[in-house]
Image (cartoon, rainbow, N blue to C red; front, side, top):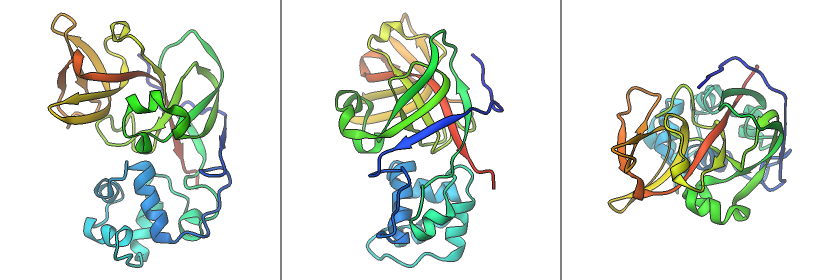
Length: 253
């Protein structure tokens, strides 16, 4: 498995007008755009957004919640300065243009013999709620497309959230994947998006996955050493996809 943190790639990003393509959000308020950042890049988790940008959680909830408090300059500055989110200051303040700045870098590229210029659909995993629903109702959650030169074949892409794979995968990174239809074809040690259900709770994680206990269980391993391994029964997995590419949009200004 090779990890390349320096390889630059040429891409063409094309999004629907209803989402990201040359979009103008001038009819929305700054408060609404801050909430959109939380929804799109942090899975609707305001606390995660607060931790990511380093601001007070109650203050951020006042901005996006029912109180609609006017954001302080310091708060907006921290959001724009956060390299993990890569938010466009022009979009945040005026609603013009794209939410994120578009300098693209391949962070992770799984080995593959099937290489081409892939036009990959990008889906809203937050709206779908889980990978299983996304696979069965993909057309309802399409945000747009991203074209990546010299990319392996992929079924789709989603935006990452959480820090269990940090710094390899950061919140807001684009995860291009290939759906795994038969879990018996899982390659131990590769990175996967895993949707599973245990004790009444649903989980959606990005982890390295290893076979355990005579292939009846899976070990989910984080890149971030602050997160402990998880061992789950194979029967708990509802949907799974091999991570083919991790793309990061970074700022050059």
